[in-house]
Length: 433
Image (cartoon, rainbow, N blue to C red; front, side, top):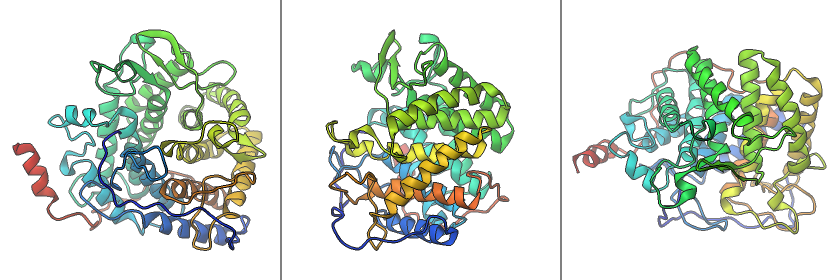
């Protein structure tokens, strides 16, 4: 997460006072077209390479880019291919995930030979899970047997990520998964911190692997993680607050910060658990957490992060996608909720936010992440464009009544994704060192 690499990554300008696009959010074809245009503009930031990612650049400003953010990127692309019924980018997508997961190893950590190195350069549990969520979404779109250009399957990449993170569970503070992977790290926030985001990501991944395979061990672990969050950890409170994490060496030492992606993914995970089990307790918790979510992360029916609001510390580059992945996950609540009031509320937020976003997109569909009318400067860059795609994907899903992750296509022999031809020799060389 912290490895700096020289980058050719370029940041676009600030949206100014020129003509914007006009999208009728009640016209399914207009929404679908906008979704495709936004996806095309996002894809221009990536050139296929052996790492499967935009080059990293260390900075808290908009020019910065970290490895884990590419997991968000591919999640947005996978969601587009799914709910937009458009697999134009599947070859590029599967080639990138194959390269990033070390080809036939199908592991973002590189397998046992590179796991320690990968953890050392910043591939923490939450980081690899973003990529794993992209992989499982690709498997939902193309089927469990879909092969990448390097012979692995998207399903295997997702499954291996799940297993690598599951093995980071212990019983300190009653259970829970760690944020980072090295228990001996000199920095305590890396060695002992159990982050909410790691745990909620694992719930989303586990339930979806269960839905693909029918293997109840995935579901049982997801329930175990959920029960820890609402129980012994104390991280999800009775009034619906979702805190950021807790130290395993001091079980009441919470980080009380609220972030939209923690609450958003918790809500999505609870919705998936409700759909899988039909247990009403999940809907009861969803109701409480969603009420708090509205107080903190919604303003005038428009999604916000507190760092966007005047008087708050400004949003860092790596916070930009929090809102986008939360919206991605709230789509599960909309789809599976048994409460019509909750569904109507989320639909209103999605429609109002999308209309506000489209109102400030450029004619080329470059869109900002700051949708409140009071926001002065609205940057246009890869971080903002990811959120624009999450937003337009989710709107499209709602308008077309397309179930996110609902497709299970037959086994596909795989794409001919653009994968650098020397990859296999690089892979071999690494393990010959």
